[in-house]
Image (tube, rainbow, N blue to C red):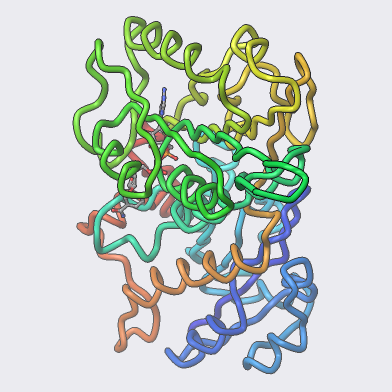
Length: 376
Ligand code: NAD
């Protein structure tokens, strides 16, 4: 019987967990046994008793890892802590392969087959396994809620007997998964919403959510969706045109949510200190990219930075601030992945070498780093 270990996260500020009682039951339904490290779910509002009721055994880290075939985690565990599992055991987690490159070498040495879930290809078949999408979606929501809570005014237009409160103007920069959810959330709260991106396909998406699309039109951006739905670094000419456009627009905004990311590179700088200086005092900027270097000049993770009377906020780990929901979705992403590759005869998941998903996510195998993106 295949044994799945669920580890308690050790990274500072990480509150999520990689399996829920629901997915534990489903793994058992497939014929696996599940061992959960005690306390793994507490910060995501899941008790040890909930896991036990779902059929898992609950015990020490050592007991969970002993003879494990598959190790589940949200972030990559310390390679030194990985002891007692079967040789060639899978490690399935968000492994931050570029940021933690040396750790990938350690995983190779320790003999685990490390599978980086953030490298999941953006193909229809893998949509339900995509941790970046599931976590970004809730992050986009949370960014707006946090910005609203720090903002010293209301979002909706309110007509009261004492006079009118005007609607907040919110500008969303970067319209991927997080940005789309930020637009929807800000609209629901009653703000007047505008948004921008470098990928032309997002224009229609912005408008279909009832927001105004603000686009550079004198320099070509990225046609359609971009490669795999991802943006690339833009030309200097484009950056200059974008800076000019943003300068004209941002001074009138009360709330700015930035979400722009480029895979494997630092986040693009979208808002300068000079632009912040043109905004009204009391305005709020939430920098969702702060942990990847930041879209906003001066933003600091987990701090409220006040510049020119504007509050700049952003979390090092936004999904960790809604751990119950993000954990439930993360857990389902892992289950959807493992169950899609489940081989009934083998009684465990099997990754075919020639599968597009295998090639994308497999970082290490047989003691070596094997991923093209890391070896390039
Ligand atoms: P992301 O997190 O990599 O980036 C966020 C957004 O920032 C993107 O829209 C990007 O174009 C934008 N951006 C980058 N540089 C910018 C700049 N200089 N100025 C303004 N904006 C900039 O993106 P994401 O949220 O992961 O998703 C990107 C796309 O991929 C979306 O269209 C999404 O629908 C698609 N997607 C597809 C699948 C799938 O088919 N399996 C899964 C997830 C996402």
